[in-house]
Length: 108
Ligand code: SF4
Image 1 (cartoon, rainbow, N blue to C red):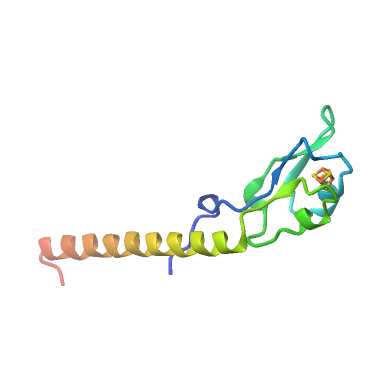
Image 2 (cartoon, helix red, strand yellow; image 1 turned 120 degrees about the horizontal axis):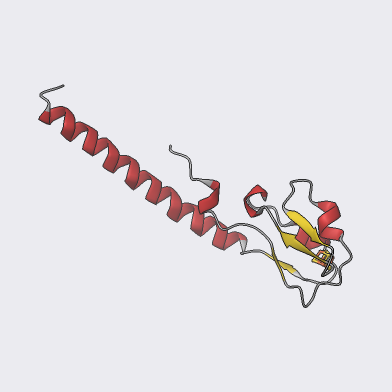
């Protein structure tokens, strides 16, 4: 099955800077480089959202202020199902186009 490009999957943290107290717990916790620290404003910035591990919301759990949110796991599953269907339809269309071209060329 064809892969879904990571950039097509909207799974990454959203930080509510009004709730953030600037304790750096999320920044210190995440090892995937998703966050950058905004020194001037004292809160994290989601610098590299697509480095976030699909389904991981651990940074939201370590945040004592409830400042980090993610889509729900149900939303993620629904999004992945939809994207898989779209990728499969695209694959079938490409395959049909190749078959059509083969027939037009007299190929087998
Ligand atoms: S863990 Fe929460 S309160 Fe702490 S810096 Fe991150 S977003 Fe802000």
